[in-house]
Length: 417
Ligand code: GLY
Image (tube, rainbow, N blue to C red; front, side, top):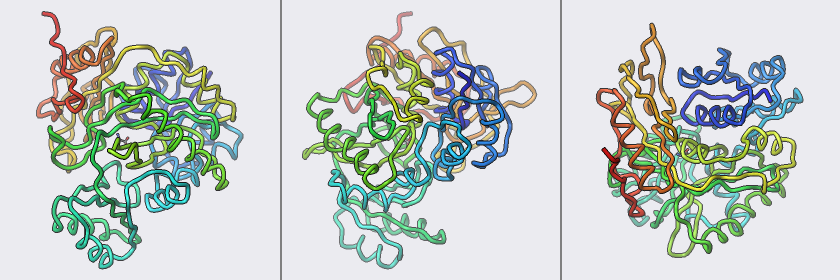
């Protein structure tokens, strides 16, 4: 097949890699230097109409959309209008991620377990409510903020600062939520709106510093699989994934693509922290290297409404992703730092997230720069390999977390010398 992958980060590099492994011809826009080594990268304006025209002109058989902003801008709708199959939710269905206040109200309407919350459009009302809540308090921007719209405020002044930051934007809305405790896990469902297949569960590490401290990021590293019990998995299917897909159908907006359920395993069972409308980043970089079947085929089947869940297969084993982020991230990242990449061995891959090339030199160009990934028979071995590979990357001042997997007691195996 001829496949167009839209996006230019680590997630899209992993999607391109998975499609290419299955033998497809892969086009990508806007891409990045890592993707350019594996696919035909096309420079294009990134608005939905132009991208859908590009897909039509290039005879693309399926479009796979990576980042949420394209979904909420209506890229899947624009492709469908031109008869091009696209894997991802429509603009209306992408509200599940794009509008967190709507998403919480949807969960309430359909009895989907989630944290208690209130949504606000007026700063003073949000502040008055926040002042009366137990701490810590979760403060969320209802709109898209590239994974950085969430603050866990341990004190009222910190909640106030987060609210003032949100309401500094015109038309802002904030969601205030109870703080949930437990293990966090990401469950991704590939779906045609009705049938679905789950990827292995994974665990992201969202704060910049070790010990789950510091500001939130888009994700600093992932382990996969997360050891979910059969009982929790059954509850996640029955209480979260299935009612969400059914609820979206019942509301006339079937959800096609990847339903990302960010969950907390609370003492009262799994609850939704957030829904996203696409592969996680860096969860995709951990999950897709374990995919044994054909991602582009699944994407086309889902887009055409006939996904066969039994055809989605993952190999045994585990994976680990170590994010190398630029100094300054998740604030203003330092850009233009020279990068020197080692040659990965089999079972290792360095996905490009925020890189650019100038005069033959690879440079950092964003906050999260590289997603260093390894697969191995066990999680500890995958962690050992991913850390060893990350340590061989030349990247002055890179930030990384060295405690990935620590929450579930995983420890990187030392590599044989
Ligand atoms: N890793 C979190 C996200 O993709 O939103």
